[in-house]
Length: 191
Image (cartoon, rainbow, N blue to C red; front, top):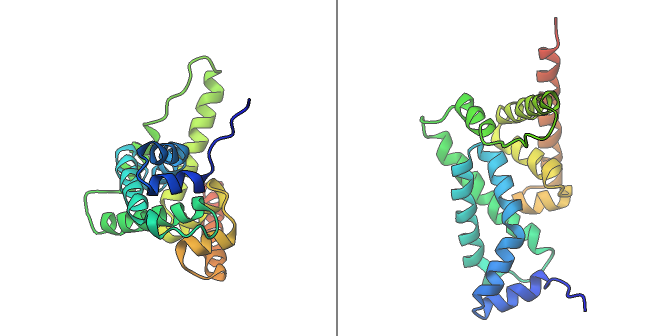
């Protein structure tokens, strides 16, 4: 007999009744998504891990307020986005970080399997590092929308819900960010 994984709602209901096992299953289901999001936003593995833990603590604390309206994933990511925005605001006022340090920290965590072609790996690594460095130069609100749209694959409506702003604001931030990225790329290729 093929057992289907428990639905989010079932795991939530069991977790609310005190089942630690259900809560752990729910966390395991989404920890990769939350961690990768936090990593792309912070550019630092340790900060991403701390932020992920902070987000899951907040999700657990607010779990009784989840009403089952919409997807749990969108609700969970809204909490994660809010925690990330708080983190970015705190970090912005802390002089200990710089974009260059962030990019170096971020690119240094990649592990590349040795079995692949080194030239291909170098090219992929360089492209990914360049894209991440470009994203790191965007203002936080624009970077956040790019992250949610292109890396998390949320709809404009989902992003609007998560950020608590109108869809038109989400679209404006996205298109402004894309324009800045395009201009940056064009400047790189001017001879």
